[in-house]
Each structure stands twice: as structure tokens, then as C-alpha cells.
Amino acid sequence: MTKETENSTSGYLDMQLLRFTTAGSVDDGKSTLIGRLLYDSKSIFEDQMDAVREASERRGDEHVNLALLTDGLRAEREQGITIDVAYRYFATPKRKFIIADTPGHIQYTRNMVTGASSANLAIILIDARHGVLEQTIRHSYIASLLRIPHILICVNKMDLVEFKEERFEEIKKQFNEFSSKLDVQDVRFLPISALKGDNVVDRSENMLWYKGPTLLYLLETIHIASDRNFVDGRFPVQYVIRPQSEKYPDFRGYAGRIASGIFKKNDKVKILPSGLTSRIKSIETMSGELNEAFTPMSVTLVLEDNIDISRGDMIVLDNKEPEVNKEIDLMVCWLSEKALIPNGKYILRHTTNDALCIIKEISYKVNINNLEKNYDDLNVGLNEIARIKIKSSKPVFFDSYRRNRITGSLIIVEEGTNNTVGAGMIV
Image (cartoon, rainbow, N blue to C red; front, side):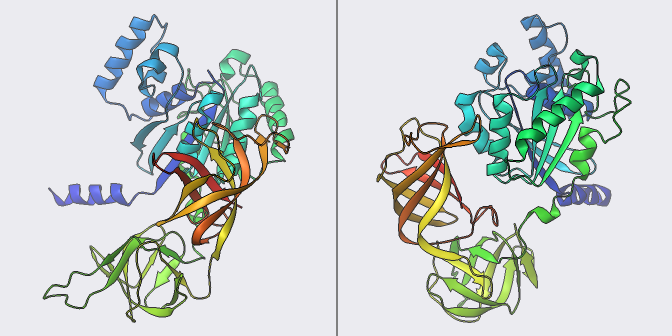
């Protein structure tokens, strides 16, 4: 490998990664938008394009159907819809991207929650002809619930409304009327035509009234560095490293991924649940020792004192402690066809910690079509969202999901089958 190639490879690996998800009503053009984005940014191989052209001809499409680039399941191609979450990866000279193309149908709400749970940004498509629909409200609420920091409202199919600025402004007004109920930090609006390519990668010649950036420019430049929590030091211990070799006879390190915050050499830390304190002696990585490490780095912490620490414990900065409790209030999206069982026993999985738990209380369900709370019907089934209280068999160290998306989230697992049945956001 030449030095130039090494530098080029190093530059690619060091580029910032943006994870984003797409959502919207059925046939709003999510898959077509991603196909257009990949095609116009030169991120598709020639053989992939050839396969898409052949598939488009077999289907009798009038044009090359770029949606087929992301519709991976046979059922998706046959029905022309997205069913599963489709992940796609591409890069430009400025950033790397992971796209989660999520389904629009109500029966696949759980798939959207899965795809959006780790996203920095959500693209919500609205058909310019139909405006804001129930699915728009549903997906906006889920994006708000999952605390996705940035939301782009892409008004698609502007070519079918003659690229009229008035229609774009009408839809902006419709969205703003209900979005006041949501907890979103950054919402932006963009008029596009995924089919024609207007304002996706290149500026539109048909909408000269729009003075804002294109979609790709926004994706490449939107600020995400401050989206992570760099204040609260949280280090869930995944593994205890004790080589007991001649070279390292007394080495004891605690390996894991920093959930939030910044850890520095000589920092005073507290170990949960024991409450014992120590100082960081060194921060080790495969590349050598560091003076400091921050989220989301994977490192090994070596402490000055020999303390009994095991997987599931958490090392935190001494002056920034999480809440420690057995009772937890959370919003849960139910992922299983088996309904939630009140007072039922489940397994709670939170960071590296597992515990038995029971569903102690169901406070209400959320009607995600109109955002109203339902206190009467407390039967929680597949794809439904509810506020519940659980009690675990041992203390859990957590923050609110609003403050920390890692230590504020958990999953609920069914005993016996080990199936994940609920995704929870701690409130």
C-alpha cells in the first residue's frame, strides 16, 4: 500500500459518521429518495444499476425505478412497499452515512422504532398532493419520543403540484400546527422531487423560489458533534481483563464502551452498585495508552485500587452520578404479537446489566394518530406505545432518556423464549 493510499484510507476512517432514518406514509417515495441520493452522489456500482434497469423493465415501469435499490425483500418488490428496515451505507468526501429505510405501514411501527433508535437525523417525507396525514403525525411522534436531534421534513413529489411555493408553505403550516405538541429541537423543511432529482443532490431549476440548501448539503454539514452527552461520565463494564501472564502478572482492566462523558487519567470515579471510589490509573486501547477518552470510544480503564468489579457494574465520575433505583418509569413500544401482561415477569436489559423485572403498572397508552393519552384501554399489543412502571430484582443505574439515550434506554425480554418484546425510554 502506498503512502498516498494509506493517507486516503486513514482520512476515510476518520470521517464523521451520520446515521439517519427515513419515514413517511406509504408511497411517499422514501425508497425512491434514497435511490436518487445514492445514484446522484455516484454511490452505486454499474452492475447494481444494470440489475435495477432489468428489474424495472420486467415490472413494466416507464423509467428506471430507483426504489428497487433499497427494496431488498421479494415481497417488497412485488408490492412496491418497504416492509423490513433496509440499511444502506455510502460516503461522500465530507461524511460517511448509514441510512435506515423504515416502513410506512402502521403494522410495521416496531420496525421504524428499531431503525430510528440510533439515528442522528430523521427524514420524514410528505406527499405534496396529500399534505400531513396520520402517518406523518405517527412518525413525527416516534422521532420525538426517540429524541432524534434533527428532523428534516421533505415535501416530496413537488413535480405533481407544479412546483408551487404556495403548496409547500401550506404543508409547512399544517406540520407546525401539531408539532408544537412534540419535543423536537431542530426541524427544517425542504421541497424536493425524488423522482426528478430536484433539490436532492443538485439544486432545482424548477423551484428557484427556494433559497435553502439541497438535501445532500444538509446531510453533509448539519452539526451533530454536540448531540452526544459529554457531561455525565458513564462507563458500563462489559468485561474484566486479567491476563495473568508473565508480562502482565497483576494487570486488572475493565473493558467497555463509554456511554457518555469524558474520562481522564487521575479522574476520581465511583463504582456502582458498591459505591466504592478510586482514581483512573490509566486508559488503555489497542493503539496504546490515552490521557483521556470520550463517548463512544471503546477502552479499558485501569484503576488505582483493586476493587471487586464485574460485568453489569458501572464506573461513573464521582460528581456526576446517575439515578440508582429498582423502580423505573418508562415509555415502551411493544414489539411482540403477545400482548403485555400486567404483573408479568420479564427480563430487563440495560447497558451491560440484566435483571428480572415485573410490569408493576400501566399508566396510559398513547394514540399515536392524534397524540392523545388513553387511560381506559390499557391492553398493550403489538406496535402500541404506553407509559408503564417496572420493578427490577436489583438496582439499575440510569438517566432519563432525554438526558442520555444510552443509559436512558432499555429492552424488555420474554423469559423462556429470549425474544425482545419491548423497547423502553426511561422518563
